[in-house]
Amino acid sequence: MAHQPQIKIPATYMRGGTSKGVFFRLQDLPERCQVPGEARDRLFMRVIGSPDPYVAHIDGMGGATSSTSKCVILSKSSQPDHDVDYLYGQVSIDKPFLDWSGNCGNLSTGAGAFALHAGLVDPSRIPQDGTCVVRIWQANIQKTIIAHVPVSNGLVQETGDFELDGVTFPAAEIVLEFLDPSDEGEEGGSMFPTGNLIDDLEVPGIGTLKATMISAGIPTVFVNAEDIGYQGTELREDINGNPEALARFEAIRVAGALRMGLIKTAEEALTRQHTPKIAFVSPPKSYKASSGKTIDAGEVDLLVRALSMGKLHHAMMGTCAVAIGTAAAVPGTLVNLAAGGGERQAVRFGHPSGTLRVGAEAKQVNGQWSVTKAIMSRSARILMEGWVRVPGDAF
Image 1 (cartoon, rainbow, N blue to C red):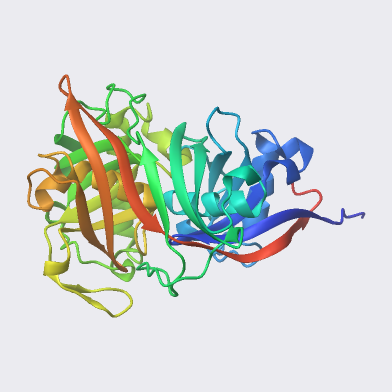
Image 2: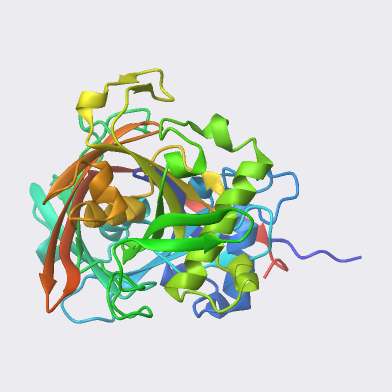
């Protein structure tokens, strides 16, 4: 029996924030994978090593977690006043599908740096030394992200002393601005799809929970930690090994997705695992982070834990951080109340790996809340570059 040989595709393996993924230039993909469809999805699943019933990604580039099962495509921008188009795919670990419904805020950092590495930014816009402002069109959600990428000797400066909780080693700081991150296209016509800052969310098998449902950065359902039996200080091992707990979170997520108008039936949630996110909040408490470092209650404004692709995230998704910052800036949301209430332009929240500060500018016009900008700092670094190989018949 004849077997097709492997093919090799130019690729770069990058860390961006607390995530990592395989980055491609659109022009380097096989021709049939340069357009959306089954061939592209099959290629990316094979690159990552999914679907994997062993949940290990031994035969691929993935790391068997939601934050390491990602692919990114960049190309010169099709939009005016932008440098690059950035398309992000979240690869399911044990099921055969890719979720294109949202962005990865952490890999947005990598997108800014990769745009320079890959020669996709006009050389006239790149300083010899200083900061290059990369204008990114986030194609999944049709939004603009501005990445302030440090440059030294005309190249991306990757090393530095900026420390990010959830990342082992320091690196150079990249500041991200998410412009107009609220999704006013969702049902409801505002970044609060239900029209309310707090809803009574009926969850089958659980009961009625207070919930703030917001579309900013990424659609997110926030609930109070104490309402679901938690402290807000939990780490991954406290939740991810408990199938019953994970099933409860999925039930809350599905109920929220239905209420937000993201899906029409509960069954649709099976193919929309990336969005919405589910997160739980608590007023400040002292706890020991996964690194062993003690986070004192006085260091943070609130605690937040969030799940991604059905598991508690080891730190915080960048897009969810945008949702946190935005919700905190709107008086009366569960996030804002957990932080002590009142008007806020920035919060520092505690997550399983440490703390993160995020700023947001929210305003109310004609009774509708909107956010003009959310800002946070991350870092990015190339881990490996060259070619990724996949069997020729994989896609």
